Length: 113
Image (cartoon, rainbow, N blue to C red; front, side):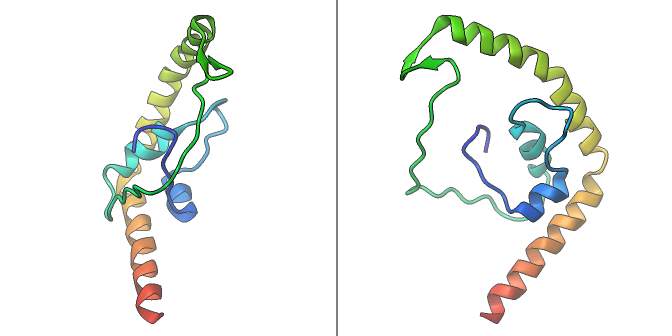
């Protein structure tokens, strides 16, 4: 799940804590690290196509200058991400109950169809 190419249900995203306004960038780790402890399954969809460009690329080619600028921003973000993950980890039992409820609700809707 690590990386920008993963998706979760909006209800699960919200249960985990969603977007934290203290962050100024994408925050996948603060969402997917708590999800490691959740019930349910991870599904890998192999036939999906994802096109992306790394933040340190310029017109499809790596730029060492952009890489170091990106790394500097990332280094500042790591301590904040760590503290958000620790805060959310303190609520894991509550989050786990919410996620389990979401899974059960989806299962019952699928059985009804």
